[in-house]
Amino acid sequence: MATVATDLRVRRIRLPRALHPVAWWLWALGLAVAASRTTNPLLLGAVIAVVTWVVVARRSDAPWAKAFRLYALAAAIVVAIRVFFRIVFGGDEGDVVLIHLPSIPLPSTASGISLFGDVTAESVLGGLYDGLRLATMLICLGAANALANPRRLLRSMPPALHEVSTAVVVALSVFPQLAESFVRVRRARRLRPDPRARGTRGLRSTVIPVLEDALDRSLMLAASMDARGYGRSTGRSPARSRLVGSLMVLGLAGICVGVYGLLDGTTPRVLSMPMLAVGLAVGVAGLMLSGAGVRRTAYRPDRWRAPELVVAGSGVLCAGLILAATHVAAASLDPTLSPLVWPQLAPLPLLAIFIGLVPAWAAPEPVGVDTAVVRAGEGVA
Image 1 (cartoon, rainbow, N blue to C red):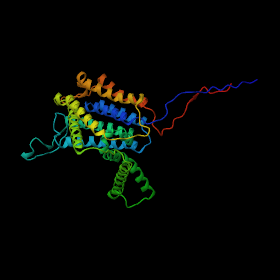
Image 2 (cartoon, one colour):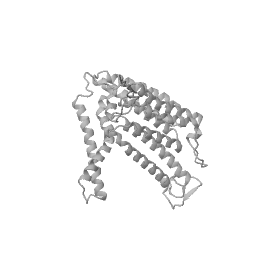
Image 3 (tube, helix red, strand yellow):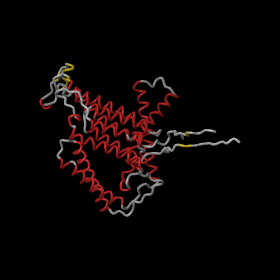
């Protein structure tokens, strides 16, 4: 008598789902803070590599996920412009001369500014380091836009921000929609080729439809939200509205000053963390008063689970370790230009940056990516 035994051992895997958008933004902002505290091109290159790795591993097939290339292109343009302006305005700072250019004299009203002159390695590297830092921060923000669903991010915002929800939708949707609009317009042009559409005329026939289509789609989304009564409130007196507006403006001003003081090492400490704490307190008070009269329900609200905590925590930990490295390994964060030295790497900043790779494995696979159930040990005896 033959006995047939089937052993189906299915390995448990996580189902694809969208991570909470706030977690992605906290991760990206943590890496952006880390990039803002250093001019070391090796560390900045590591940040770009980490961000790109995570985006490639965890982005979905949504339209906004295609906008990361545009951010990378904008970052490259930022670096080129920064180096160009450093060459044009004051490129003769330093001793190692690369190119001899004629100097253009300026009137006495523009004293302290020089045009062209000798282009030195110190000036070019200074412009490259500053531009690369700004470009890295831009790429971090582009990663957040590519990974986080802007509509779900807006749905996660507190009810107190209902008055600016329409503007936020337009602002968050325009740039990601540009990538999808560009692909759609280019596909249409390939289907209907026009030999005359070359050069400037061809650029105009592509750019204008792309901008118009992206703006129209964002306005349609905002209009649909307004038609559904998003953020409607009743029973608020004019005096309370003025109080809420004043608190919000003061809170945002305090937060801006505090963040600037925290990122800029030359700002007095009283304008950094204390001002940030005061701004947050005033802003939270304004949000609580503003959201008291708003009622909003959400179908299947996004919840914070273990992957969200790990992703957000990796960004916060990266920023914290970089801030700590400013007191432990400050020389490796800002390489000197006079004299010229090769950038050095320290263990703590490098560890902080590589912590940003955690979401590549901790975050679940996004919706839209095919996931196969792996069966092991299936056989017939």
